[in-house]
Image (tube, rainbow, N blue to C red; front, side, top):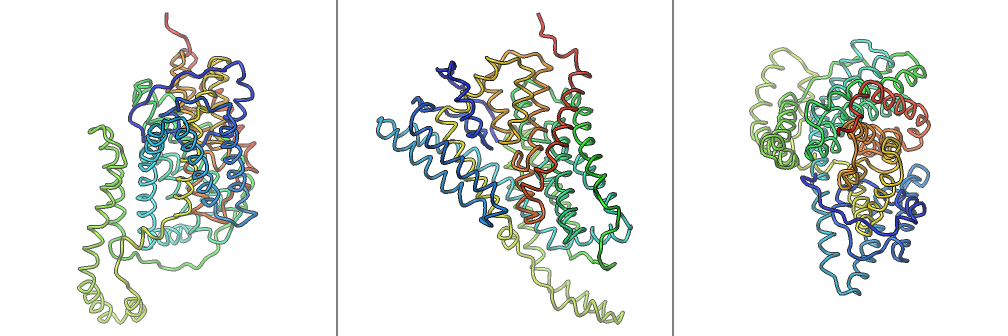
Amino acid sequence: MPTGFCSLARLRGISRWPGALLLALSAMLFSPAALAVTGSLEMTASAVGFLAVIIFVLAYALVMAEEKLHMRKSKPVLVAAGLIWGMIGWVYVQAGMPNEAEHAFRETLLEFTELMLFLLVAMTYINAMDERRVFDALRSWMVRKGFSYKQLFWLTGGLAFVISPIADNLTTAMLMCAVVTKVAEGDKRFINLCCINIVVAANAGGAFSPFGDITTLMVWQAGIVQFYEFFTLLVPSLVNFLIPAVVMSLFINNRKPEGVYEDVWLKRGARRIIALFLLTVATAVACHTLLHLPPVLGMMTGLGYLQFFGYYLRRSLPRSLERKRIRYTARGDERKLAQLGGVVPFDVFNRVARAEWDTLLFFYGVVMCVGGLGFMGYLGLLSEALYYGWNPTWANIVLGLVSAVVDNIPVMFAVLTMQPEMSHGQWLLITLTAGVGGSVLSIGSAAGVALMGQARGNYTFMGHLRWAPVIILGYAASVATHLWLNAASFAIPG
């Protein structure tokens, strides 16, 4: 997660921006580091630059066809990343500047190592809670309470909207998705709708808080929007969530989930693992707010919490089993005595191994692909073209929609690097649009990408795409709400 913004040299050739804009639109994805280093060689109009874009577009097409091809999405982007950076390295070696390409690669890799480690820790905790039957117990509670599908839809979406400003939209979406897949196991249509709702809600909830999304964190770190000013986006964000949710809820069969009314008991340490996860999130927040260090430091420290607790669970397991065996024998509970025979020691590294590695490798491949394309200069060209050729309001709205095809992180990083002359209302507008625009497509935000891996086969790119018009309606309504409610902030001082 970037802690500062490097300068970006303004590129020549703006007169040819329409063609370059199309190339840049296909080039951007997931990488705030892509703008951190810009090559000193002009490559946006070179044969190597065009070939790199073609390679990325082909790889991306294979990613979007994952549902049809049944090929994991990490494969094409890993190969594409190697080819793109290989071409960059070759060009810079021929030019006698090998160190610049090496520095750019290392810079890109370092920036995104933080994001992947953050995601890995979140996945590990979710897997640990799943193994301790936390989500099974929550599902059982929901079934016993008699919640209908429509109530579950609103409950998970509402929780995603409320929790994401405190934690982050990625972790919140993963938690809610785990609950939905447990409660409605086997019902692909309902799980797909819920995942769409969760992604929209988590992204909308994260848009009005510095801690809700990486993009809002970047704006806050840059000192452009103060902490309390983010809350002026609360109502527009709520509108963005509610309009699609209301429409989608009309297409849900109001029936109750199928399932056995079982009495699920939590495994030993489940509640303490939940507490450790909350402590991990608090540590990550404290690292940033108090120490001005990357939040990933707090997340990795939290993984250490889990490792120590796992050690305690393993060492104390024999004593715990003996106490339970005596208690269940005295009560004559044969069922629970039989269950004790299947208890295995808790292993943190087994939980790490069960993380969605295809998603993590996909992040790496895409990040490195776009890091290379950004190094060639395509992202800078796009930013120049938009803010020096368009009205800032339309530029901010379009960039929000661009973040549906790409990730919102490079979009926001591009704007912050350019530092266009805009009113405070415009800065709030790009904060809103970059935060919620990624909800239009499943690949437009880290939450959507992670849920495609977590709910594989249930939540898909095409499944999300069918509801894109409704999500765009919510997007337009949220922008209109901001322009109306915060009209006074659009005046440029002096």
